Image (cartoon, rainbow, N blue to C red):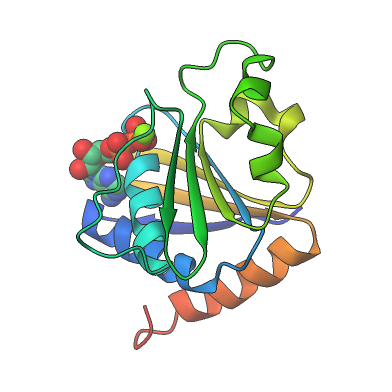
Length: 163
Ligand SMILES: Nc1ncnc2c1ncn2[C@@H]1O[C@H](COP(=O)(O)OP(=O)(O)O)[C@@H](O)[C@H]1O
Ligand SMILES: [Mg+2]
């Protein structure tokens, strides 16, 4: 299992790297975000939404209370936050399985809380603090589709004109 590490030095850079990823996402892609509070999971999800074509005037908020927010860009997007979920049984009530195995793009914050309910095919992104405004962003694609996505994305991210 291979991982790839990117460094972001500002919230803007995280959003820009995420927007680029959003451009490569296809129907059914599941992106699982993990990392301590304040590392930038929501910032990354907001960038993905922009890259997927969710209009700039649509405010992408943290779904920590709502648990799931839905947006429409080039594809439908579900932004999920499992922070407040205490028991995986609660996920049934919110239609988690239908969402995660459906055709929308799904971005899940705190996905590492319930690894058992995640699809095998997924892109995992782990964020960690380096210093005040720097974050390490580690991508781990699981499954052939996710690996292909990660390769396309990383090629573009390292191409100065595209990134
Ligand atoms: N490089 C960076 N990437 C993302 N956020 C950063 C970065 N540097 C500083 N920040 C700040 O860290 C916070 C991240 O918040 P948020 O995205 O809500 O994190 P999380 O969802 O992981 O709790 C924001 O206040 C943001 O401005
Ligand atoms: Mg958050």
